[in-house]
Image 1 (cartoon, rainbow, N blue to C red):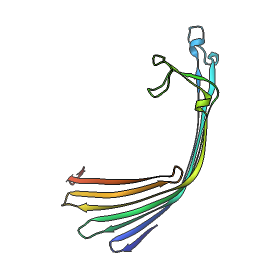
Image 2 (image 1 turned 45 degrees about the vertical axis):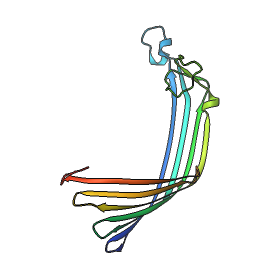
Image 3 (image 1 turned 180 degrees about the horizontal axis):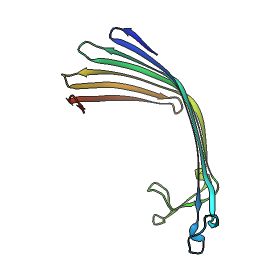
Length: 183
């Protein structure tokens, strides 16, 4: 919904809903355990569904933006966003799993060891939470000549799930090199 608030300004409101569900599982096949020849698929030993993950996220909310063209061709913009988020995640490992693919952050008792052993006690997890998230911003685009625009601003974010807040100063620049190219 866009509302013209004056000859040089408007207010825009959006209401939204987002839903995401993901399910995944991993298993392994062991074709090297079949007598040295290319095995038939049905004869290859497998371990299906070693690790399973389910993730769900639901978000609905409102976003409002106000823009006003100022004297001198500048544009002031401010806005906010308020959302309700519900998160649901579960990871289940069905038993010890030896992995030969890992990165430098994986813990190994011996650094020369070329594998890690994942254990359910350290992998299995369940997380469910819901809360509000809010954000607001303000910025002012300043035209400096015919081809350069500088836009300083600030943004504030608050997350009710983690109880964290963050102030973020921002700046962007736009230079019209020629009528078809901007940097």
